[in-house]
Length: 171
Image (cartoon, rainbow, N blue to C red):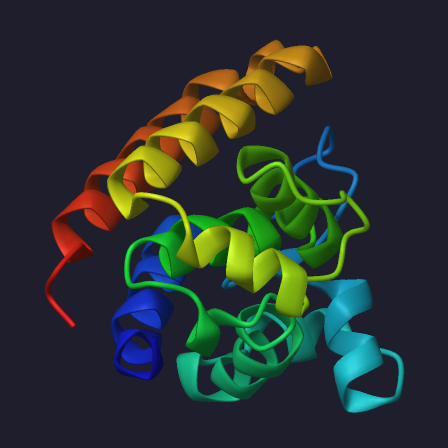
């Protein structure tokens, strides 16, 4: 829902944290959850380490809105469900987030949220859908075989579910 965006962005930034360059992270150099490649694509030039280290919340907010929230049609999803889907989009890509949602609502898993997916979402109980998204996401993480990240991913998934459940009925 439209009213959810500012709160969702704050939660994204809390989850994503600051500057990291973990050798086991395929995304490489990252700040505020934005990889160097994503930032370079956004600014349409190579991103230096200095660029990456100097990113601010205000710099990345429009990117998160356009490339993640809007891509999964956050404004068209029920409050709570929007947060679950957007956080998966940020963490694993908008197409994967859409496919997870589509799996939960028994819609065609094409990776793009359109009218048929939105109708299927509208026909579901939001609380049940939040729980299903949590389960599908956790299975995805468990199947990745990355034990060094599973504790953090599980914490994030659990926190997102709990926040999403708190959002139900707030908007």
